[in-house]
Image (cartoon, rainbow, N blue to C red; front, side, top):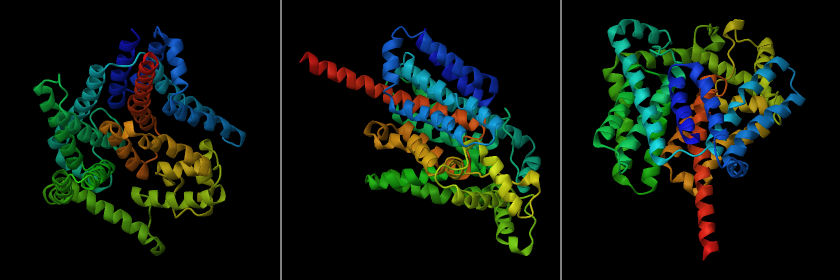
Length: 420
């Protein structure tokens, strides 16, 4: 029962990410029920308390609690504290419920890949039915909305994850996987990559090609020349073909250049109010001013918005109040809210798994961390609920569960030594 509840929570979480916020909210509840249904709960809770990945996730909540000692935005702080319960519930589910079997984990991964690709294909159909409207939106810096309404930035990231994970699952060829499923996963990966380009999701494309570059460099360093050079060729040909063949990509490139030009010519009196990228750059400049004054502990995770508003009061860049953006980088956002201490904690959550040999051998885990790390350069992933849920679900499913598996392996090894 515990294992099946955890499986149900995982599948419901994926549906929630793509289509229903209600299911996203309910899936951790099913996960906690899975923990309570575990017949070996006392033993597994002890292991949970020794799970480094779960403890680092819990430390995010502890830091937010301690920031209450110097916060001034109590209403926001209470709201953020409620949201942060995700950091406790999801790792608890993957760390203390009966763990998923190998086939169940494979089904969860395949369900994510196929579901995301299906939404991407439906969104492509929506675009092809009226390309003029889609291109007009891109021309003015907007995006073609996914058919399920999922926010375009994170939908682009999910498409990039689907492209990498789908290809990896098809190429690894698990022993009991039918050939038809492998073809379906490979096709889903291709659909996701095509959707990213046709729909011209800027963040998704950055994540996709950034991931390809890192994978190519890693393959070359490991002297896998054929695959490494093949990926480098794709890095060169992919953007060129997309730019020459797809009007949506050309429009996105021209809109981005024009957006950047407005920021570069700010001293000429340019009006930045209608340019999203320029407003993000002004937000980064504004945040850096505040960070220099509160570099150790930050202004408090709940106080970042208020601190940015105060600084815009000194220099607004000509932006109307509604267009004064918060910082769009998770690293800068964390440094602003938590200072050097908060950033160190966040970097430990994200990158500490890569210090472990078992994690470096897990291609899915490495791809998840890599693509999320690139996303965080240009997006504050934790500020929106979908970004928080996407990261914490992947973290629990891959990192917390992976470390738990290592605990079981070490326990079994110790048992054999004792018997000997």
